[in-house]
Image (cartoon, rainbow, N blue to C red; front, side, top):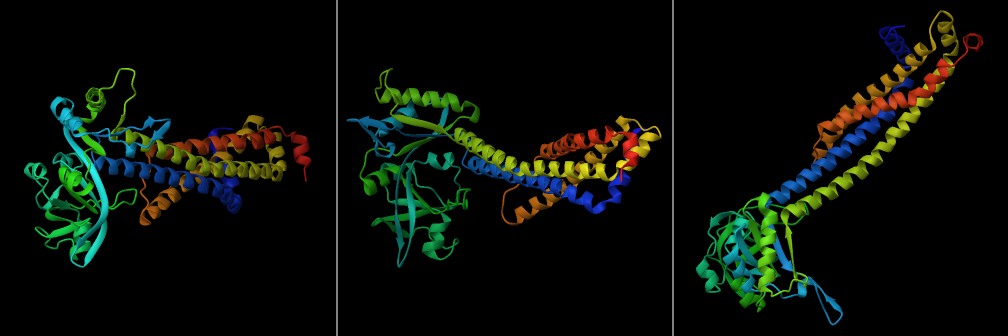
Length: 406
C-alpha cells in the first residue's frame, strides 16, 4: 500500500473519532504552547536586561576597593579607603585604552525645598560621568571644571526631584536652591528622563554634583567609593582593564606577590553574567513545561493502544486481503504523527496568542524562530516514539485470530 493510501486511511480513522483525537492533541497543544510562552518570556527578559544595561554603555568599567584582611579579620570592600585622588590623576595621565574617567562618591539623604522634601541619592562626579553613563541635559547645563576646583555647591537633578519638590517635571527650577543634609545646592541643570530600570529603580531620582564638593562639604573624606571609566571601544575593554590594573598596582605600590586591593568589573561582564542567569532560568522554565509534552506523548500512546484493540477485526481483514505487517505498522505510525503534528501546529498558534497576552500584562516577550522548528521536531519525535509500540502491536497480530476477535 502506498503512502497516499495510508495517509487517507489514517485521516479517516482520526476523523471517525474527532473528540478522542482532539483530547489526544490537547496535551500536545498545551505542552507546545507552554514551551513557546516560557521561551518567549525568557528570551524577552534577556533582551530587556541587555537593552537596559546597554543604555548605560557596554564599554563601562567600574573600579571599586577590594576586600582586605587585617588582624585576621576580613574587611568589607565598602569600608576600604584604597582609591585616592592620586589613582584618579594617574589614570588620567597614563590612559591609552580609556577615554573617560570619573571618580565617584555618594551620599543618601533628604532633599528639601521650602516645605517639601524627598529621599534621594547624591553622586559626586566629574564632567566625564555624563558621557560614561550617557546622561543628557534637557534644561540648563552641567557644572564646570571651575565648579569642581572651587568645590562649588551646584548640582544637576533628575526629573523625579523636580516633580517631588516643584510640583511638575517641567517646573522652572533652574537657579533655585535645595538643601541636602543642611548644605545648600543651586540647581544648574535638569537631566533627561530615563525612567525605571529592570530592577525597579527610579533612575531619575538623583542629584549629581562636583565630586570635590560631595567629598569635602558632605562626607569630609579624601577617598573615593569607586572610579568609573569607559573603554575606547567595547572590543578594547579587556586591554583597558589590563591597563587600569597596571596603573593602580603601581600607584598602590603593590609587589608582584601581592593581591590586588581593588576590583575591576566591566559592564560587558555584567551583561554576560545577566544573560547567563536568564538562560539558566529559561532552561528551567522550558524543562518544566516540556514535562507536559512527555505526558501528552504517553496519552497518545494510550489512545493508539485502545485504537488497536478496537480495530483488531479491521486489521485482520486487511491482512487477510494482502496488507503486509509493515503497512499496518505504518498506518498507526502515520495516525500518531498526524495527531502529534496537528497538536503542534495548534500549540504554536496558542503559544503565539499567549505571548501576545503576556505582552498586554507588561511581560517582555520575544519568540525565537528556532523554538517553533524545535517544537515541530519534538512533536514528530513524540508521534513516532510513542506511536511505535501501538504500531508494533498492530503489525504483530495474527490475521486469523484478529478476524475472530469480538
